[in-house]
Image 1 (tube, each protein chain N blue to C red):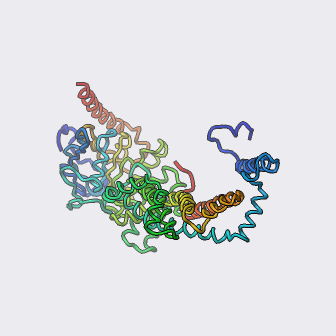
Image 2: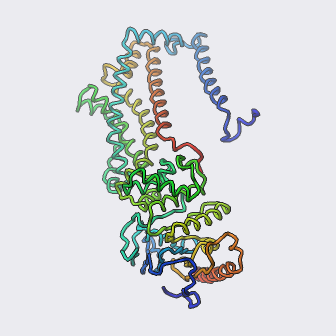
Image 3: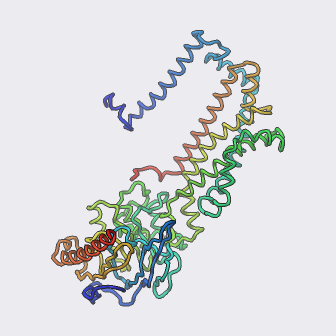
Length: 281
Length: 266
């Protein structure tokens, strides 16, 4: 990784049991969009790893290309250069091994909650009784027992995202990619969802890459936070979060948390000033 | 609820009031009609009275074989419409899903669509005569080209995010088409069919006004020739009623097919 100040370099502060080998490796990935009048660099030479069982967050302002990273990893967008490795295999196109939860509500409205969660399982050809069992397990996990027969139109925003998480997890992906999944939710629901996701993560032992523009969320959820800057989008720093797990909402006001937040805010501020003066000149 | 409430912008009103309003407007129309005709303000040659219409309707049903004309028209509309839909729906879905299909078909369809179907009648008579097939062809031309473009838009409007989601759940292109684009487009397809069926009825009359020997359009022309004004109005009313019935059938099917559309929208 380029241009990371020494003090942010990774130290071994993991408190969550994490296996060492990289599960997901993003290798010199860049993305350039050619528009009619100009060329936009959405993502500049990006390198990072996510280890098995880790919860990594990417924090950045809107339009910094953080969604582009996820889309490249998911195989929904071709990188302009570089590649993505999952379990030492080069990623080529989308696949069920990389589940994704989007910010927009993407439940299939014509399917019930149960059918939504079972969508990937059905594609895999898993028989109905087995499917039913898995679906029930995840319904329970997200606390929506008894909602299985409902259609998404009758669910609240928070419930929809819970089902979307269950749907992605039921497919048993190698990594779970989350693109600001709580971005459209109100503050109270968002808090509940963060705690719920951490609980689900601890139970499922999944590897999660989580993108957000909310500093609190990035720190609260992550083992490590990658801070991104915009125009062109690139990773500026990697910040380990040495806060004990399981984490509860109350840590958001702890001195430890505040200290990390101040550090990241300072980083972002520097960069914003730089960007602002570049535009000015 | 206060009376003033009824005049708020986009505010809901109680359903019994809503229904009453519909009945009321029909009653007013009927009343004006009665006053004009029974009051002798308009000669019956121009506007026959309601009772004239009923008598005429009975007369046509028993003496002039109205049922035969209805069946002939129904057959033509349905044949033309179903034929157009059988080709138009898959083609529109392809155009909405694959840019290559759109590039190939859109220019032709977009051009032909602006040619009035009725202008094809002389050509069609030349080509395929004056039988049922020619009427069906007019209806086909009138509905098909509109339908294709409407269905294309329906398919295009299927959210890319839903398709991407299905990919991340392990779907390939075929699965995404069958399990996402198709079900997502289905309500829009039904809407399009409902709207274009109405247009098919319009083109039916146009087709039957020229070189026809049966059907409701023909019947209306015959009535005009013999100055049976009541007969003209019966023909128009029958077409209106048939349209209404098919519309209700579509609406019922729609609600049955898409229970998932109900509920709150965010």
